[in-house]
Amino acid sequence: MSKLALKNIRKNYGPVAVVDDLSLDLHQGELVTLLGPSGCGKTTTLRMIAGFIELTAGTIEVDGQPISSAQRTVAPEHRGMSMIFQSYAIWPNMTVAENVGFGLKVRRIPAQEAQQRVHEMLELVHLAPLAQRYPAELSGGQQQRVALARAMVVRPEVLLLDEPLSNLDANLREEMAQEIRRLHDEFKFTTVYVTHDQSEAMTISDRIAVLNLGRLEQIDTPWQLYNQPRTSFVAGFIGQTNLVSGSVHAGRITLNGWKGELPAQPGMPRELASARLSIRPQSLYLGPAGAGTAVVADTGTGAGTAAAAGLVAMGGVSVVSRTYLGEHWNYLVRPSGGGEPLKVHAPPSCLLEVGQACALAIDPGGVAVLG
View 1 (cartoon, rainbow, N blue to C red):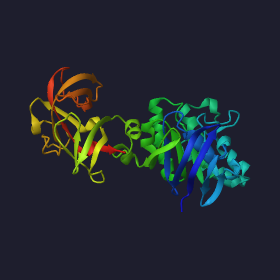
View 2 (cartoon, helix red, strand yellow):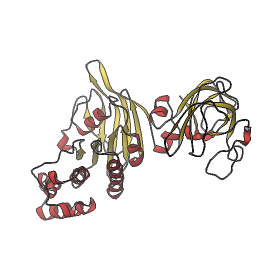
View 3 (spheres, one colour):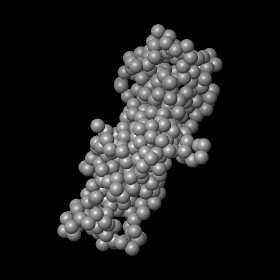
View 4 (spheres, rainbow, N blue to C red):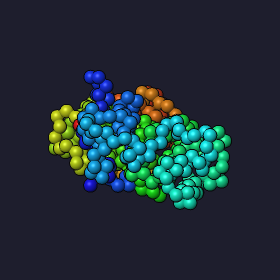
């Protein structure tokens, strides 16, 4: 049985469905992230789970028991859930310890037990030395830890987080994402996390549910979402990619305007007269013009050639533009046959001039056939 189940939930504002026929199942102890652009319905979904917004249709269940439907909504305080808001919502007139212990006080936990649980939680989030400080005396990251500790100390059935790191700078956001993952592994709370930041979602999630215009595009592990996207939206939203046209015949993929055929990977369609394809830039390799299957590729395998590394030579290309980003070059190349241009990530040592002719090879593992 699922710990948390969303069954065909919908929320309408007038004629507009901001969440449309969404179904999700979360297992006990799983951390699932709702990821998508602004306006995709992820925060509305989280607030429906919390009980702050009533459903237009569908049901939400915890341990098989309905807590929300179009006919009845259990009050937020009776759901056994904790929610962390984007603004943290910690009380400025309370010390760190008082903030963390507030939920225990409301639940009438005996004073000695509450004190012990607060102390243990502050130790876990590395705030014990700051127990008597007030929020104004804390950094943004420390305030975030207070909010986390306050939400977890009550041992909720489900933990909800609404873009909790969006107010932090990039370095601190990365640090706190790892901290949230560490705490999740410690307590194994069933967790729903909302963000629009792809790298944040990839860092902390067991699975990621990608939403678009109120509908679920795909839910999978971070690896599967990146390497096996099912739709053009998911492929374009998770990392950088090339979206190109082609076809599949007898398990061989052809890209329009390109030479060479790529083997379809297991699980891909074997026949498609017209296909939309995703090709990751780091799965493309550039080498000297005319090199063919001997194109030198920095694959990290030590193999040194396209054939030895399992790459497929795709013929000659010319460099349309380039951008140096320190860790790699971003090249845009166009095939001699006039097909769609492709973005290529190349190592700093791969120095090519605009207009220069070169050869291209593709790692078939970086190609996905989209629905």
